[in-house]
Length: 92
Image (cartoon, rainbow, N blue to C red):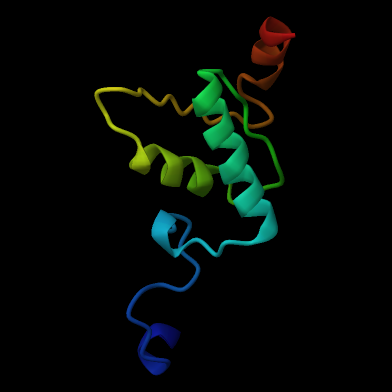
């Protein structure tokens, strides 16, 4: 209804944001730098943060920039109620 009224070309509050449309806030820029540092170190990392803070989008943006034959990215969505506690116990 409002999409037609305001002549939006796409839904304005869609969850799956295109990584190239991500606003480069200080937090997002820092997260990107930290993930790139992990790549340089050939290390493993864990991204955590508040819901809606851009964790998945930052990871998708980095993943899209990587050569698929050189890197393999695993995305394991965890939330309260699924594997958070068993995974946390395993990692600690």
